[in-house]
Length: 220
Image 1 (tube, rainbow, N blue to C red):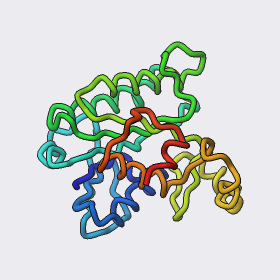
Image 2: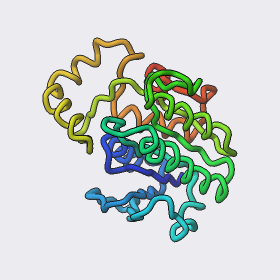
Image 3: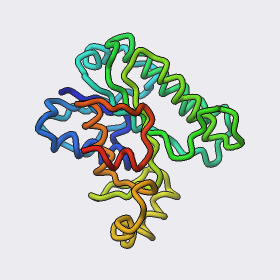
């Protein structure tokens, strides 16, 4: 199985990449991003694409992939709805439409978030935009699955690119991992489990197209 990951340098992406590289069923991982990756592995091919809206130069490599794990995302903090929409909805759909054209039926997993608003009419800006993104992805000729984790605990040194999140995990990291065992499965998952769940969906599919934390934690 060949996998393409968008956002492998982010906290979730780092965890997903780790699980892909460790999985014997994955033959090749294509990591597409705007900056070089520090990770090195014989089956990893990291490609720098400065403008992710322009994927023409790597379409041949994308067409050879069986699944896309889209972990790219930004915090809505400090952004108005137009800018957040451009970075969240528009960019994601641009990539997904390219993949749908190159390889219809490809598995596409999208990291959304707990509380996403599928009605697209709620008061929360980020939730509306995420909901609009999810709905558009589900309408494409892809096997699209929406991952809606709540709290995500980094397990193997993964770090967030968002300064506020880095501070949060630096202050709480020592207690988050043991605390997670006491929390309901509906509230928290881990970077490791996110990767395992995406691989399970890529291999076997899922009856659910929208997966909350408890659904993610059940997948192996």
